[in-house]
Length: 296
Image 1 (tube, helix red, strand yellow):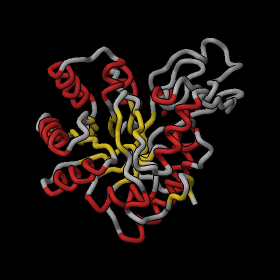
Image 2 (cartoon, helix red, strand yellow):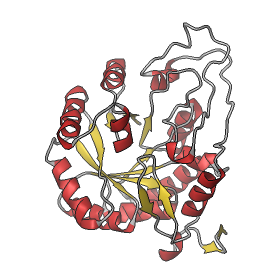
Image 3 (cartoon, rainbow, N blue to C red):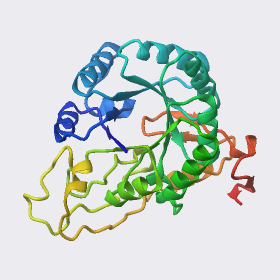
Image 4 (tube, rainbow, N blue to C red):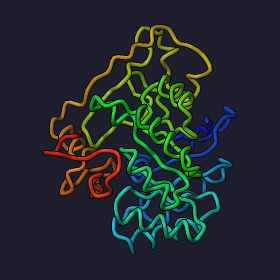
């Protein structure tokens, strides 16, 4: 199993690299902005610095949602370094772009995957990685691990080479369970602050804290550690409390619910504050059909 880190913070990446188990990095525009990285040249330079730190793949996300824009941005990113993986959203134009990049021999990471049908589309298009957001599914009382299992079964049935990159990791058991199921890769945010979840906050869905980290531990043990998201596997901590707090924004819950269950006219806002049109599962007749806006 490969371990990726989901951040644009160079210090966190360096610390995870020094741990000796880091295989790659995933980023997105909001993570860049969080580190104060703005402007095309600064973003490009930052990607190059990340590639200098790690030996594995570095996912760099496009911003465009139209085919021509995705192609233009993706090709520019791919020319930066041979470690760059073009991160493309699971939308209709994104699937077309993934096929284009695949035919050109460029590596891709299909992100924002919430169903096995979408994962199948990404694999058919030739994606290098597919990123199912298991924590986001858990947030709406749907078992994200079931999605990993379903994708694993489908890919094994047809010998797809696309790697399952488990994203939106919330806690240590997500990591262990993904390993048991057979996810190829996981990407985890460096949660180090007390009260932070193991993956980055879902800013599109309002504030959330999924795990209270070490609530009764001493201040020293609760000290921020950039590699803590992965290093938790190396040992145990006292009284880890799975105190889940649901996002309190009802509009957010409705938005992601309708997006996942594929009302075709709904736009889902991502953590980068962009709107992506969601491909309805009913349009590909795979896995889940939608009836009256509800899954069956």
